[in-house]
Each structure stands twice: as structure tokens, then as C-alpha cells.
Length: 448
Image 1 (cartoon, rainbow, N blue to C red):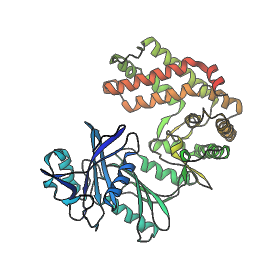
Image 2 (image 1 turned 120 degrees about the vertical axis):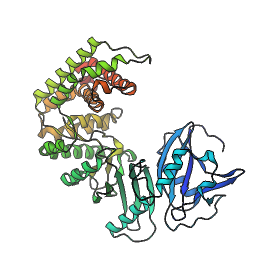
Image 3 (image 1 turned 135 degrees about the horizontal axis):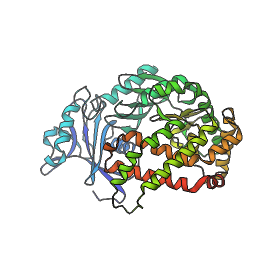
Image 4 (image 1 turned 45 degrees about the vertical axis):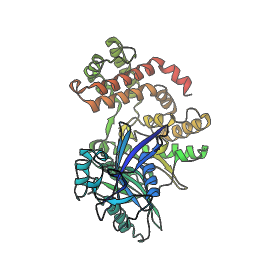
């Protein structure tokens, strides 16, 4: 294969579900696995799935992908039950033992041996044979769908996650499963869809044993739409209405494990995490970034406490925060706006969500102005206009402090600081210091 610039390469192991044979091409010393390439920085599972179905001419489910190592990644895939394997472009179904020794590592051979079972493996609960086909059958069962062909587009696939769009003759659905080892998205989504059904895609069913969510097709992502003043106004209003609806549920949502980024919590944890931040400075690498002095670090904490005191005096109620609010996670149809991917929600000042969303529209003045006006007008139920303006003026600095605080909470004690986590902490500290040095007046001019 001629190497293409800006592409990633993957060796592909496709297992026939019924015979346990693998698809390979003959060579002088046995059989070789297919080698494919996809554009770098693309959505790898989606690209690989399309290429494999075109290459073999029959449905294939991507099970797991190992990222490129030494230039080549690895794809685990399987056919559906009853698929007739026919020679196509030189590929044949052969026993795995007939593959060249160099085609599979020892770990990959062990993975395939465990893959034939029906139980969870060390690679994750979704790394097992027949899971994806069982999932499609479950979709048909709960929706009463016809037994005709299903058009499947995979977007994510691993031993711990699954995301696919399944188009049946009568409707299109989204299937998402996330193992609890990854995060609590399943638990959070289940509760949020119960409390705020108007602001999440329509959930058809949950499957606790798989941590799977079956949803109606909620429309088109904001990133794929021609964003107009009307659309951005609809998004801003929906966000504000969701947050207003969540005020009375914040205690309950905190108790179920959502991140706590309330003003008083950020203030306490930043100061308490000084030993961890100091430890990250001790393992400073030689990357060329300016060294942060302990004096500047303590001054930074003093300034964060000042911001928290200002926000505390405004007495704005805490609300639900998406915590990853960008245009890919907002979908719209003709009726409503919904928010998806609740992997890391939090409870805190509502303007943190507004700050995250507006960052994608700062370069589009008219859209930004409509977003800001609509959101602030709706949020006047929580605070007076002058209070909102005062909070917005210091929001970038506070948002940077929240990002640092969440990183410090994940890392834990100073003894748990390692090289990579120390670099991340130092990067966030530098970002926070820059935001604080710009000062309130700068933000009042920039975000007016």
C-alpha cells in the first residue's frame, strides 16, 4: 500500500461470527490481514466502519480499536450471524492459526480467544462476540420495529463505549452505552431525562445490564446547521430554561455524584490544594515555559478568593451545568433544542455554562449579541441585570479557577502528582494567572 500523508493506518481483524474464521489474503508465508488508512484527526470508528463495509460488501460491526503504535493501529471487528463469507477482492475466511506470526501480537491473540465468550473481558464489558447484533435486536424489540435491514452508522466502539445511529424502515434511533468504569453518564442521563425530559433527546428505553440508552433521533447538531439569529436565540433560551428548572433539584443532583463547582466549594478547594500545586511546581520540566514562583501561586489563590467573594455577594442560585457545552452537544429540530452527552455534569453558578457556550461565537458578533441578550434576559428570574453584568465581568477568571479546581480534585493528594498530571496542573495555573492579570476592566470591554 502506498503511504498517504496525514493518514493513520490500521491492521484489521474481522471475525466471522458463525465460523470463528478471520478474513485474510494469501501470501508466501500464510495469510495476511487487511491494512486500511483513514484521514488523521477524523472520527476513527465511523471512518473505519464505512471502509470495512465497502471493502467486504456485507455488514460488519467494529468492536474495538487500538490507536496507532509504531505507525499502525489495530481494529477488532466481526460479521453478523448468518453472514455468508464469499471471496471478495482476494479476502478469504481462514483459521486464525494460519495467519503469519507477525500479524498479531500475543496480547491481541489472547484478546481474540476471550472475545468468543459471552462475558465481560479485561478489555471491557462490551468486548464480546455478538454484542452489537444483540443490541440491534433489542432496538427492534423495544420499538416494535420491522425485521427488515437496518442501516447502521457507528461513531464510537470499544470495550467500554458504544455509540451508533440505527435506521430502521420506520424510524431512526441513537444507541449509546457507557460502562460505569468510564463515567456515570448512564446514571446521570437516566435521572436528567426523568427530571427534564424537554431538554434531552426523547428516551425510548434504558437497559441497566448494558448501561445502554436508546433515544429518538433528536435532530441535527448545531455544528452542522446554518446558525441564524433565530437558532442561537432558541439555544440560549433553552439553556436558561433548563437551568431555571434545575434550581430546586441541585441538592439531589449533588448527592448522586455530580461535580461540585459552587462558589464556596471552589474557594475552599483551591486554597486547600496549594500543597498539590506546589508539588506540581517541584517537578517542573524543561519545556521552556516560565517558572511560576510560590509567591505568584499564593497571590493567585488570593485573587481567586476575591472573585469568589464577589460572586458570593451576588447570591445567584446554583444550577445544573453541562460542563462540556459546545456545538456538537446541542441538537435541534423544528420543535425543540436538546442537550446530549451528559458525561460530566456539575452544579454551580449558571453563568459558567453561558461562558462555555459563548466562547464558540466570540468571532461572530451578531450571533454572540443575540446569544448574550436572550440568555441574560431569561436569567433575570435569578438575578438583576446589574448583578448579571458584574458576574459576567469576572467570569473568565472564575471559569479558569473552576477548571483548575476540577483537575486538582481528580488528581487528589500531592503524593498522587505524576509527570503528566504536573504538566496539566502547571498549564492550568498559567492560564488562570493570565486571566486574572487581564483584570475585570478588560473583560468588561471585551464582552460588552
